[in-house]
Length: 161
Image (cartoon, rainbow, N blue to C red; front, side):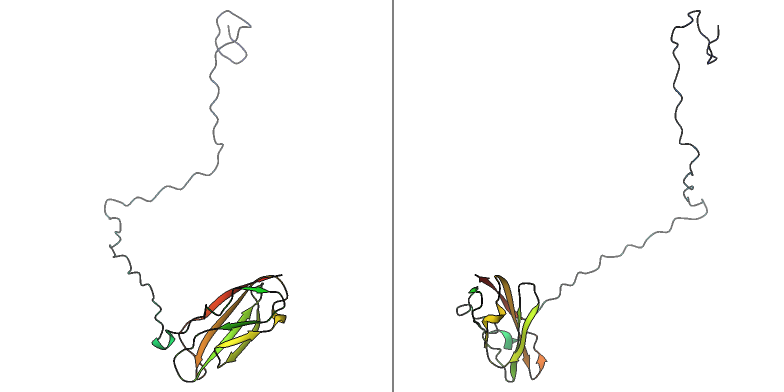
């Protein structure tokens, strides 16, 4: 006897029959292109071995005249109060014709004060500290108008209420 699926059955009509489920296929999608293989007449190109590049780490050497150019941590304070004056101090560069560019940054990191002076201290008025937060100052040295390669000296000031 034959069932509607054209499978042969034993005489047990109405009994389930064992069938294999069809294997799903991908359905005609594009196939990958074949890979290139060198023919027997040519050889694959070889990459010449190259020594890895030498890593050069730049060093920063301050000129000897900059050795003493540091903040005066004994006189500078890092805790301050809103709307009060603040004086900062630093040790000089040991050379003639030196001036200092001084910048003060507010809590948003914006320069709110900038000047060039020959002295090694400056007082910022309380108007520059209207709110609580962290302020930042930086000093750079110049000699006869040209920047000296000393790098900047700097510090933070925490202003409380």
